Image (cartoon, rainbow, N blue to C red; front, side):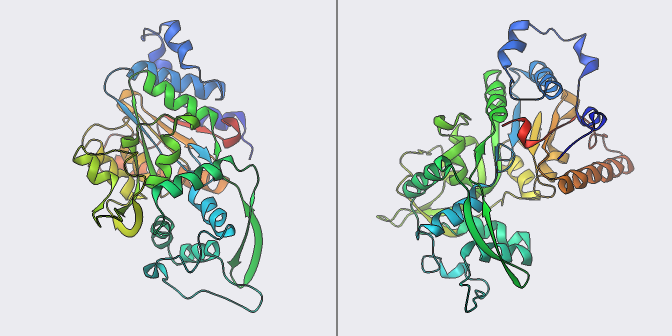
Length: 360
């Protein structure tokens, strides 16, 4: 998709009012090295980082389509289904919510089933995509995720679109080099990075916290959809959130735990992303950056989360024009609501907007 220069300029936050007053050591700015960003976006991000460095601040990012291109769960489902690892037979009975839609010529795939659940409601398919891994150990899932990340091709899929069976393909995640740079620039300047994902927390952790992918997020800082995990030997139920709260978390020791279908809350989509920030990070201190790409699912942490008073940035990865127009409408509506309710006017301030291909 294409933008006029004026559109980019109005979307980008450039902290002109602060430049003359900030002490900006050249070494500090040059060490940020945001090389895989458009120049104006890089300057805005660098200015914000310098202003907020080493003051116990934090940033939050969505993962799918924000921190890497494409969607982990939506590609892992067909990846494992095509290999016979994820099947109707392995699907937990509690997840068979509607009848499969089979014909003489098409036995419905789990990928198609997932898409039809999304047609019922996003609040149905979002949890299902995290629960579908029930019965698999974290060790096995880690191996499958690594195989998917290394897969250099698209994945064939068939699914119902209305009353027609459509043949298409989906792509595995592709690392955004720009986001890898940004994550590390933030952390290297004393700004903690948290992932707030609508995907299963354990799957996202397998990418965000594995050094070979470059994000280097502490595993405790990955927050996503959580299900209960079971120790097959003892029968004990647990999950990372419970362990982290009890200061008993050990990522390596968890690898032989098996994913269960039972959901833990808060659920990290839509308002649940903001609820997760309040629950697991801080009730009062807001992030100095929130990164997202999906209106609705990322809107709450964008509009309620960013501390614009500190020069904080709303970072938006513009992967679809319709989504961009929707988030522009939300900016206008939320700014109006803030004004009507005597709140600080922040909804339409300090947005940095980039296209996926600009940060690959």
